[in-house]
Image (cartoon, rainbow, N blue to C red; front, side, top):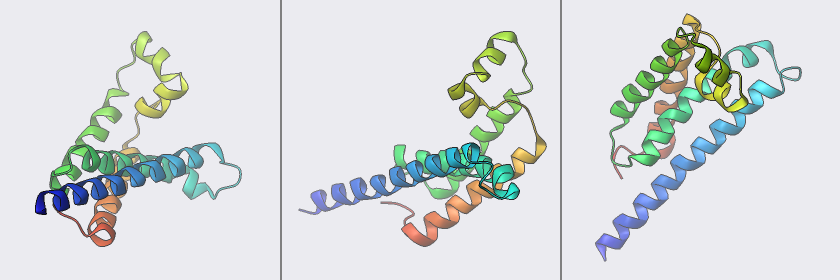
Length: 138
């Protein structure tokens, strides 16, 4: 019976992380679409921070046994690689970035400030993970 208990805990934990991913997506897109109704600080910073948090929670959902610090490092690495890829300006990737989905995933232009926003978002995600979900390993 203990095996079933562990399996249920993993499913429950994965579900919490998937919910966190969905919440990050909703608020992140909201921060990019409702710009006239939101404070400038939110419009300027929250989208990138939420994107990094979404990557962190996504890693925790996909790789349920990954340690939170490893997920933090991997999520920041992923975000930084995507940000630095914006320095590459070939026509094919420029056209891809000009699509809605391409722009949301790959971004449009390199900014050092985005790296700080990613760090804030990923650190907030790991803090929420440790405080609210109280999980290190399922």
